[in-house]
Figure 1 (tube, rainbow, N blue to C red):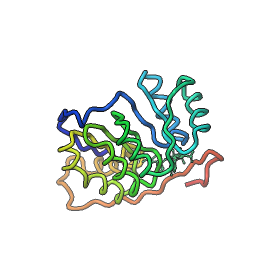
Figure 2 (cartoon, helix red, strand yellow; figure 1 turned 180 degrees about the vertical axis):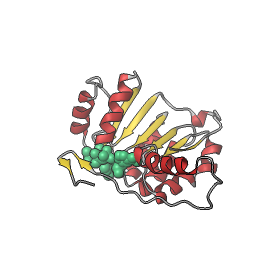
Figure 3 (spheres, rainbow, N blue to C red; figure 1 turned 60 degrees about the vertical axis):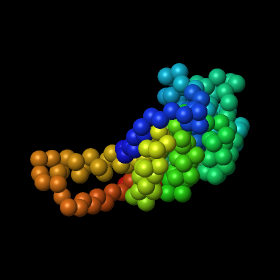
Length: 187
Ligand SMILES: NC(=O)c1ccc[n+]([C@@H]2O[C@H](COP(=O)([O-])OP(=O)(O)OC[C@H]3O[C@@H](n4cnc5c(N)ncnc54)[C@H](OP(=O)(O)O)[C@@H]3O)[C@@H](O)[C@H]2O)c1
């Protein structure tokens, strides 16, 4: 997990409501995150492209029947909604993070916070490039919050324990993909 911490600057412009938006709330990760945050009593708002599927997934995740949902079908449209409504936190599980993360994270600023589970260097570097902007905006951006980064970084951290810091480390990893229809291969 990689985190950029904001300074907590408070201005009218940076005022947010108490909502946590889950982008991709009908997906595998989105449904799980929705259920866990709902169980903790947070105000969770599903965001995605199908109202019907979000309502059904929300009910399964334990959200009340009259829960607000935000219908939007691209990172740009989602960003417009975020800038209009100012949720406190946006959890991005829609994927294609190299493209979607900077657009959605920028929309959270100033004052709103962002988290995703990007898995690739291009996406993570793109989000980290917003560091200075996020600090000025008092926003916290978290990328790589999934198992992928943990699994690869943990190996390096373990192997480097008690040794001089390496100049460079490279980890090759192969994901084992389990889709809802079943496990894709024996990877
Ligand atoms: N770092 C890690 O360890 C880790 C772990 C798991 C997953 N991931 C990554 O996280 C992402 C999500 O994984 P997942 O298994 O939850 O995928 P998933 O089940 O396919 O869910 C994707 C979600 O994003 C929504 N979505 C896709 N395109 C959209 C668009 N243009 N506009 C609005 N919503 C859109 C989908 O909505 P619909 O229902 O309308 O299709 C769905 O709700 C993937 O990129 C995956 O690689 C990373």
